[in-house]
Structure formats: C-alpha cells, structure tokens
Length: 154
Image (cartoon, rainbow, N blue to C red; front, side):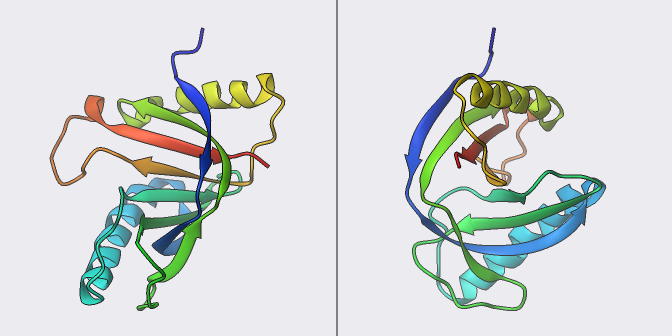
C-alpha cells in the first residue's frame, strides 16, 4: 500500500534563476545552501522577487556526482549574473507527489513514484525537480519538512 499521494498534473513552463553544477552527493546540501543565497543576492540587485519556493533540478540518474541545478522560480527571464543564469522548469505533464518528513526517508517516496510510473506505463523523463516547500528560514524540525517531487512524463 502506497503511503504517498501521487497525481498527474499539467505544468506550465516556468522561468527560473539558477546555478548549475556537478556536485558530489556528500556536498549537495552545502551546494544548495550557497546557491540559494547567491541567487537571492543576484535577484535583489535586479529587483526581482521569487514567485515560489526554491527547487533542486536533477539531470539523469545521480551517481557519485550529481548533475544538479539549484534555483528559484521568477516572474520573467533574468539577466545572467556571475554563475546565476536564467533557466526554466519545463511545461507538460508531470507526476507530482509531496514527501513529508526528513530527507532520510525521501528514497521511500521515490520508490512509490517509480511504482506509479510502472503501474501507469509511463516513461519518466531524464530531468526532474524537487520544490522545497517548507521555509528554510524558519528552523523547523525535519519531520515538518515538505518536499514536492515533480517528475515530467516523457
């Protein structure tokens, strides 16, 4: 029995401000934390407010190194600034699920989503993203963290 509520939704294309990297798995948290503060600083200079929560976008299967992009959705295309570049989250059908609780149990939610793809005979895209819905500014307990997983369907 699946614990996770999973649905298929239509996602509009969304402009982003992002920093992309090839990051060792162990340094991912540090990469995100640095990237998010660099992006916010660049956006402030441009007078731009994010229009949603921070995200992590993943390219291909993570191995020892992870192809990743950390960013924020923005109202329109930004000017590149240093390593902060304009990007986008793709339009189209996505399989969407919200993981509640610590990152330690994220793998269980991913297993549920992979099961969903198999059951519905859908092909997962190579690129997917996670929205970090709980405000990282408020020191919340990991149990309250909410991670929305958005996995496009090919």
